[in-house]
Length: 275
Image (tube, rainbow, N blue to C red):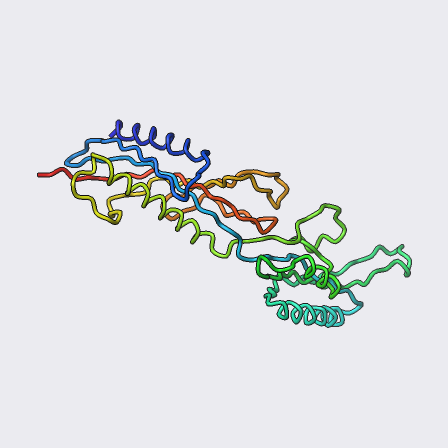
């Protein structure tokens, strides 16, 4: 058993080392088979790599609207008027408006402030997201939304006086896990195809990968560096899957660009010994 763990660790190191190589073909399989004798069976280790492009499915404008008044009801009424105009415009451009938190705030000015400097005490802030097709003319849409009352940008809509620049338009995948499942299927199919071509597979090899072929580690990395919305600079996307668990959430993109994903997989295949 100790020998088997040691061999699996070596196989994993080899598999992860393949992740940085650029994939020229859609699927590239490079299996390594190591036989480990266990009670009544042989366990083989296989590694493979695969590649797949993935593109975002939605462009999202992040921001909010703030409305101030002497009375709360007046502030809410003004806010709802702006929201109606924005909703109508978003729907006319085949988009979807999602209303998130609505925050009510009140300001207590110091007693020595003059009357001419006083701002409206009540303020209502509505956080929202406007979603469009990724190829929509987002710059023109953003300009019109500003004209209709959008005056807070990014996710931190309560910070009205900050000088830090934030991304106001992000591009997201509609179903990133589905993209990864497709990539995983390619890696499994490629590993099984090469296994069937190897002499150790024997004369009979099923066309479809059997249940005995188990994924141990599946690591995904982008082939290009991508800017992070949080200001972390350009970095590779990289995360791993273990079973149905993903090690991290997919990052959001700052532009409508295609990401080329490279997958590296370590699998084990148990073959029972003939009686």
